[in-house]
Length: 550
Image (tube, rainbow, N blue to C red):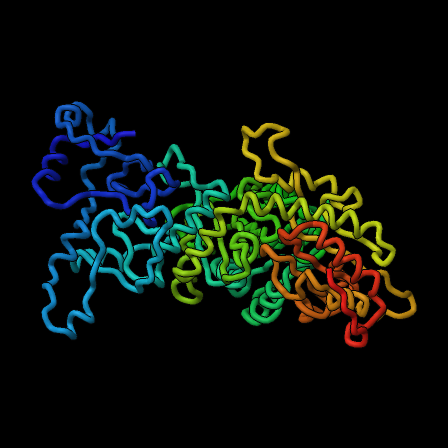
């Protein structure tokens, strides 16, 4: 697409040394998906391939109304980097040379791997430029004025956020506004993303609905902070075909958040997101999001979904009627157990503004180094998720036949209570034009099972689960999930200890439940390790000085 300006506008540009250009996160490759924001104040549709036609005759022939140019709004003009750098005198003293800025030559941004921008602050064109930056309404991405301070966003962070928005399917441009349908914010942990999303819209007197089975940190925030802040909290059974009706039964006039987590951590139960979105629509009416308003002004509740276990490889929640998609990017998106990160993506401008304000004033954006590592992890998400799923299915099938396992919970098994929903919930990276046999159907890398217990002793299943975790020699006993290495944990004695036992069990989290994040190791090695540990579940690892070598 070419952008045609009037001859008057072109003549004005030609008489200056100042260029108008697009400032996306950082333009490593012109073919990368990005938000082209040049000329936004002219009201022109934005496109990654924007080009200014310097043909005055062609420009004059196209009227302002036909091209969409509003000449009553002056273009935002930016100085070239070289001009800003050149105004500083060349240092002569040793001390000043030490403290001065030295910049690479033009073209450095063409490195195939995106650079890491560690700077906390950015050079301004002039005082007016600084004034404009500080007057802007908070938003996830920068516009044509660029960056001002890293607490408000940085190039490396924004580049990774753009990539996640692309994976969520909201990076394409809206034909009416010329802007991307949705945007993403990156935080310094998954919990930071969750709490920032909630704090963006909840106020004293509001009501929020959570599932019984929800990540322990989310439950703790709801109990320890939301209630203390005067926010009413309800819990429902969100799983299976009855989930939408259970949410609907909990609706109140002051309900502001309907929160889902699918697959649920750690029970692997599924929530019908389209069904939940429909009951919200039926009860409260359509969502009305007016740009420039506050997110709390919305009359209809915000439907939020934590899709950490599925990732956009399997579930694009925003395409299912969800307002806010949340991920702990520490897990599968990063994929290497070496960062803490969280992502929040939405198509609502009021929500994104509110969340950006919370990030700016209370929480914090993901730092540049971890943003770089996250972006690197995203490059292999497709192939990693395929291998995770293939290995997980083999393990789930073995567990289902083991005599010491009472129940195996994996969406790819026919025995899963939500099996009818599973294939629709796990997209397996398919595109609209994918052939049926092009991509193998998988169901994620998380497997849970419950150890056989004793009706007369509640502690038997719990102790057996602990023993299994401690007998393993290939699989790692550690919290978290989604890394290339397999990780196992016992929620009742580890990650979910802050949830009362009665509440835990009501959500399906039994004492003998074990959660396994299946890694990329050879499946045979993992199977042998698990079989050996399961066979010896009644032997205390501390007493058994075995020399097991997988």
